[in-house]
Length: 232
Image 1 (cartoon, rainbow, N blue to C red):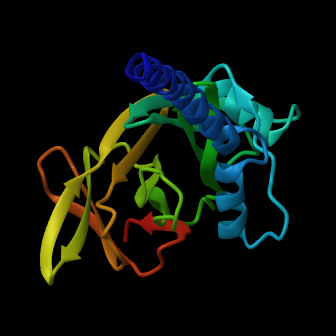
Image 2 (spheres, rainbow, N blue to C red):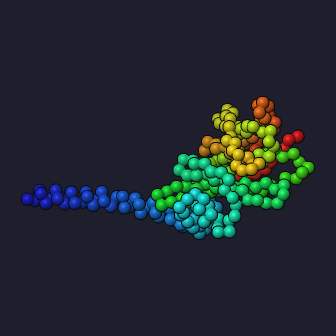
């Protein structure tokens, strides 16, 4: 009889552990993902903030961006692409004439919905005196924040450009990555390239025409910055 009671206690304890384990995991995931939770605290440290920011959970990638940026956010979503664990979105805000701007937003999917993780963008005035070929922005890898970084992206101004590459050096050896070119709207073409997490500047951006002739190239020394390439 004593053996039967002991076995029943063991079975009961085992059943409770099996039942409570998923609840514990779910509770941890909620503490991590909730607004102001552990994930937001990690991002706050990257920004150098003493208090955690509060990033809401939304029901779509677009809504996650809008809720984080605020209801006054009026940029247009022009392209998106699924990446491992989330979604990259590109937005554009109509500005004054000869002004080019592009914003990248990364949102991550969890069991509760979508959360904004990181983003960056630029606004460049394209004077008529200069022959702009393409614009670029470089976003570095983030410490303790999971995101498909580093990456480079931008918009293409010169319509003769048919290919864009980013060259890095890994262990002293050059390695080339083809950027993806996307028609993102009327008379608007964007490009972007994901780099290995180990990649560090300098990066070399090269642009080619339809005959694979090199049109322009530029060495990018900064891991976090933006600029333009010009046709001589």
